[in-house]
Length: 70
Image 1 (tube, one colour):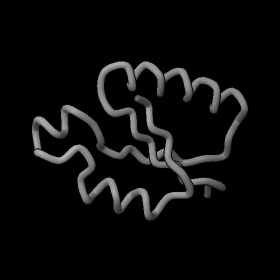
Image 2 (image 1 turned 135 degrees about the vertical axis):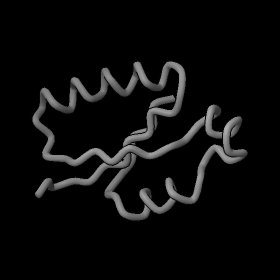
Image 3 (image 1 turned 90 degrees about the horizontal axis):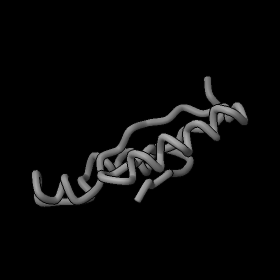
């Protein structure tokens, strides 16, 4: 079982690129973590009318920390 549980929130646009780079670094230092994808961002606002849906808030409450790309 991983030591940390991290909400992984790339958002949209450049956030995806930033998070890919962050993951390379985190994997290189062998961080003992589970990464849980969480939806957030402009595309969600356009699609669902809410950039921070309740499902993401639930994930944030269940994880140790969050990484937000944008």
